[in-house]
Image (cartoon, rainbow, N blue to C red; front, side, top):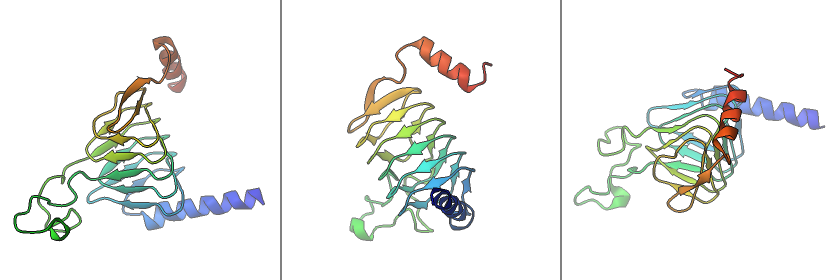
Length: 182
């Protein structure tokens, strides 16, 4: 029964990767929880072994590296999805980034999430930030600025809490193993 369940999950994930999200570039090993939504105006590029937990969504241009994990309810959202300074127009009726003729802010906001990143439950990532390799974002955080490599960030807005490893030697050993001793 477990084998059958794994096969069904693999088939579902490949269907999502190759059919539902075919307009985007998604690497092998993609896993999606239920009720995940992915949309971007221009591009979504996802590396190998990406895990996106249930009820998560991507609503902005993004490049995601390899071996990245998103817990449940993670959201990547645009900073300028609605032209809130459109004179004489209520925000609800203002032009929005999904409109073909949208020409306000946010059109070139690219979010970059590098390799080996873990994003915790309920995190919101604002478009245009870079989350560097090996970082961890604590549950419930809101990421509004770039994140340093191999660091742990948390809070609203997210701030550096500490380094991922206890010493430079541990980080060096980790990187050496990942690169095959090179």
